[in-house]
Image (cartoon, rainbow, N blue to C red; front, side):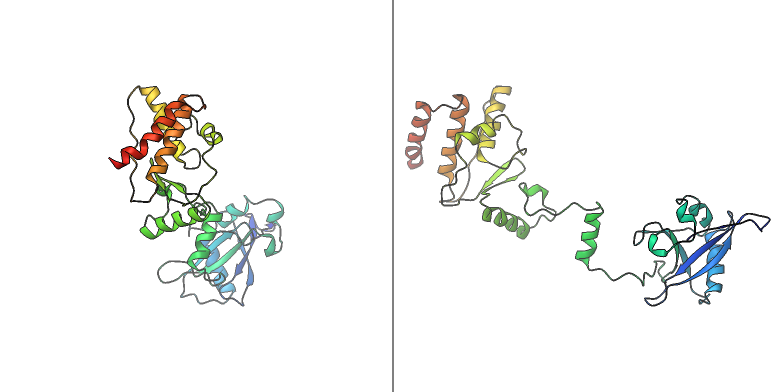
Length: 278
C-alpha cells in the first residue's frame, strides 16, 4: 500500500503496508520494509511470517488502485516498490484503505485461482450486468429490428422478439434484406405521404423497418442499375399479402410521380382483385 523512504538504510528502503483479507472478519495489516529490487515473492514471505499465516499455503500479492476496483495480480518476480512509485504522490504516503492504492495478500486455491473470500458470490445475471457496465458485453435491447442481430438465434427468441415489437405496434421486422410483416388487422397511420418521403433514397436498415423501405430500395436500384427488380410477397391466406401489395404500389407510384397520385396507381390497384381470382 503506502510507502515511506527510510534514509537510515545504506540502501534506499520503503515501507509497504500490506493488507490481509483472507476472511470476511479479518482485515489486518502489516508493514514490510522493501527495496526497489525486492520481488513480490520476497514481500509475501515476510508478510506471511509477520501475520502468522500458514506458510504451507500459496499466496499472491495484488495491487488495488481504486477502492473496490479491479485487482491486478503481481507476478512472483514483480517488484511492488516499482508499482508504488507510479502512484500519485499522496498515495505514496500512509493513508486509509478506503482511499484506494494499496496491496492485498490473497490466498490461492488448489487450481491456481485466487480465493476471493471478501467478494460476494455473483449470480450469472449480476456477473453479466457488470460486464455490460464495463463495456465487455453489448447492452441488451428491448427489441431488435433485425433478427440477424439477436444474441441467441433460437425459435423462441425470434418469436419473442416479434411479439415484443408487435405489442408496440411495430409490425415490421427485418431478417437481413427480408421484411417480415405481422398483420395487425387494423389500420395504422404509417402509410401516408410523409412516410414515403421519409424513406426516400435511404439505405435499407438505416430507419425503422417498413414496407416503404423495400419499395424505395427496389425503385432506386432499378434507376441506378437499369435492371428490372422483383419483390416477392409470400404468406398464408389472411396474412395481408394483398394489402402489402397495395402499399408497395402506392409507394412506387408516389416515388415515380414525385409524390402525386396518378391514374396509373388506381388502374393497378383496381386490377389486383381480378388477378387474384385468376
